[in-house]
Length: 219
Image (cartoon, rainbow, N blue to C red; front, side):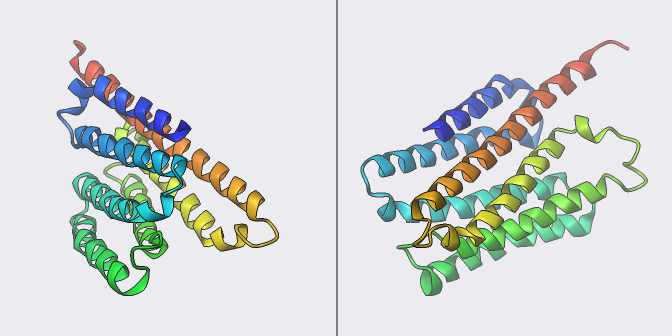
């Protein structure tokens, strides 16, 4: 439930900053966060009623939607035409990969870890490419810390790097000699990564607000 509350706080921050977000692609975070909170709430209820294993299909669909959403944002915020094309072509690629994984590999009764790892790899790559663009000569003199999408990238980079690591170690953490400890460690790390991710989102929304106010000040 803590995760849902934290996501709600980020959603309310985005709604509060709506006037400042609506002139940018960042405004798309509002419907995306609404969907995120809904899915997480369903997940919370499934844990309470012990039907989590039957709801993996919801998470599997949402994971693909997440990757599509983030890839679209990268396509909009990349400056180099080549990187824009890579982000654009990633969208149909992740859809095809998810469908193949659903039909032929992990099916409906398991969380699609292969899709998560595949998409995470590309998102981490996109984050690194975004940072690279900002060290190019034409961008180097600008303050990266004041760029709202920079903080989105920071959150995504840390979250998906951490997710790849803990999901790669998931089976080990659930091994017979440390089942309970493994679940506790997995849950603790996952919650911490979520806090980092949504804190970064909130910072980006507030920066949109501050940047608009500063741009409206008389010179």
